[in-house]
Amino acid sequence: MNNWSVRTSQYAIEQREQVWRHALQKVYLSMAAPCEAAVTGLRGEVVYCRSPLGTQFVKLAGSPQAIIGSYPLQSTSATNLWIALMLEGTATLRIEDKHCALEIGDILYGAGGVDNVELHLSSDFRILTVEMTHEAFYRRLINPGTIRAGTISGRQGVNQLLSDFLFSVAARMESLAQTSFYPIEMALSELLTYCLSHRENDTPRFRDQGQEHRFRAICHSIDLHLGDSDLNLEMVARLNNVSPRYIQKIFAEANSTFSHFLRQRRLEQCKKDLSSREHASLSVSEICFRWGFNDLAYFSRAFSAKYACSPRAFRAKMLADATPG
Image (tube, rainbow, N blue to C red):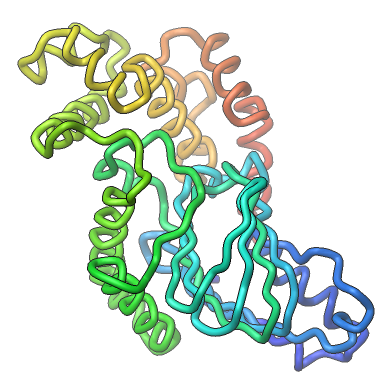
């Protein structure tokens, strides 16, 4: 189902906490243990819309409470990018051991399952969250492999344009036709990429824009040849008319390595296929070889190390979760 909503006001008071926790769980969130008074007055509303390309738009509203990011390691959402915009209310944000105030118009962002994030909402609130698939943004980020949770101030420049754009989406998303989401996703991807790439504390920074474009071109050329088991450093260098040493240096500047990037991209593609009903007829070994791995045992170890679950167990769970009823 692409769209759904839950309102605790439609349930008896004694049922509301359980209903609310279940609704939050469906969007990879949870509620910290509230006090008795907070439970008695608990109010919550979730409105969920999913676009044809898989972007998830969620509006949350409710009474004061603490909300925690709760991504399971084996979820396909664990490589997605999420953002949250404060529409109304006052909040204190905790990312790992750091605390800061989150004001109306500010944007919180992160990658699924990477950082421990808590939002302590001290008043009635409204929040818009958006979860974008990894493929929608990774090629255009300076360093596709590392996105840590942080905030973007929505008070000036392009950051303010992004914040205002998200306010407009929140106001209209329930009335939009499915076909209307495509231009929204394209604009959101462009604005968000720009804002993330120009964070004050963003690292790594390439020494010039040309270097950044070359890095993206190299990453794209790797993606185009992921299924080639012979793909190596020398081949990528030839494809991009540079030396192998140049490839090593530009990945080092992006706080990564060629081999790490190649392995992660292959694992991500395998993960997508293993979780897709469209590829259910392919065996694990066929998917492994399809994306350039030439050793099934090595693939299984690498997959288990990254996702804390074997490929077979991951596939069984994801396909079972996708089965209606």
